[in-house]
Image 1: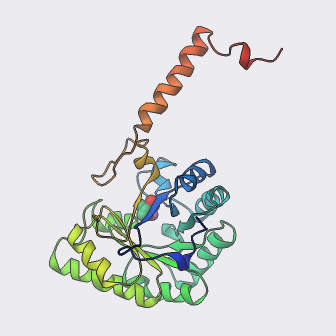
Image 2: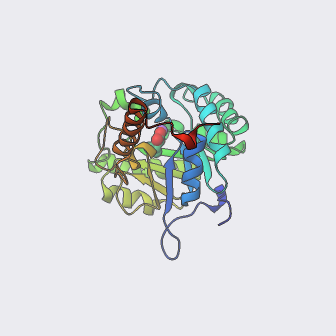
Image 3: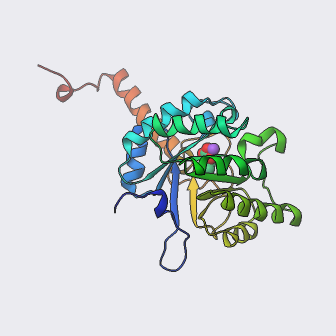
Length: 266
Ligand code: KIV
Ligand code: NA
């Protein structure tokens, strides 16, 4: 398979398969996910929680994001690398967003940046897009708004909220967004949003009718034992596997079974 470009992002349906995205924060896992056939490696600011151990994504800095984006870019050969603009690095003005996005692309090596928010971000999306920065929007549960939203909960449940989500998706598309993430909304609302725009909608906790799906790596691998939302399907018991493996290492060192002759130099 040839490398995926921003232009190659597509709606699903007909003979087009859904897009597959997973978060990545380092070289080793970026490589494995790329080799497994993942289309999009998202350097998510979720790294604040799953890498840094913070309670929210808010403390993540632009320097952190540039560093992890660089690590991920080195591990990919085919997947598209998308990096999150972190909380403090884009909301002040379109110019601030441009400076931050340019660093993620030039220093981090990503092809696209993601930012959270609807109407308030329309001007910024257009500003970036016109200056050669492909943008992915993010609507629904936007984790950087956790304190405004009063917690991590499903969005768009009321008819008014659902209609507003559809409007905001269309506004972002008109502004030039090339794709959207839609997080934690009822599947019927996600279907409406997906049908209302010509850009691909990548869902997380948004049901099966989106154009693609994204999961946080540590959730998909069963490694993260903190907050575990209903939509975070675990494809392996990574935490158990890691504890077993390292427990074996502990036992063998303490019993003297490791290192054996084959691990030692004469
Ligand atoms: O930061 C992140 O991991 C994300 C995805 C869950 C969409 O924004
Ligand atoms: Na994020």
